[in-house]
Length: 253
Image 1 (cartoon, rainbow, N blue to C red):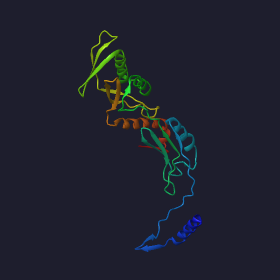
Image 2 (spheres, rainbow, N blue to C red):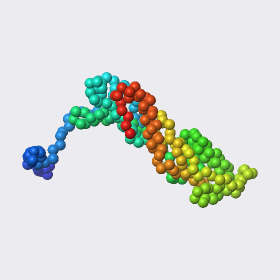
Image 3 (cartoon, rainbow, N blue to C red):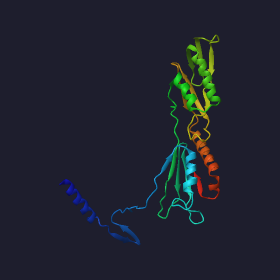
Image 4 (cartoon, rainbow, N blue to C red):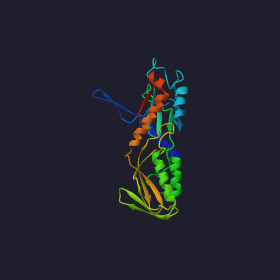
């Protein structure tokens, strides 16, 4: 009974809400809000996790002749826009259609690094993370060499004045146990964007804790994100150079 009553109310509301058009000082107004029912079919978005697949489908599908997604520039104004949203995601959309709508046929999202900056790791997990989640560079080599020395001592203590750390080894297998200064800022290249592009190198604050735990803190203010987006742009520009030249592809962001 309740369902029938609800149905009747819905029908009554539709009838009573019959819109009235009023013209005031040359402008037309409706007595209720109207929403256009969009019956046009939209394509389902294909999502990838790499840039090479995105480039391939743009070349073979989006630009493969006069389709609904793309028409030759001499016959229509539609183009394929590639939007670099951030270091992890890129979206492809068309220009505005006849009804001021767009298609978003493709997108790609890079796998983010699982490394937890600002949190401490024990010795073994920190070494594994450095070897698997960072590009091999001088900064990574410096930290790994330092960790080898730390791992050789039975005991050590950290003298930290807030700027520079000193490690003091009290005993161990090495005969030259003593004190070693630690560089507080190290330049590293963690995997933070698409694997096909150059990973940005930036500053990190390296900290050793007295309980044999280690941490890295981002210290570049997020500038690496701008470099990552530039690297993505360079990759796409090289892969789609001909399409950009003839005006069928535009890179934004």
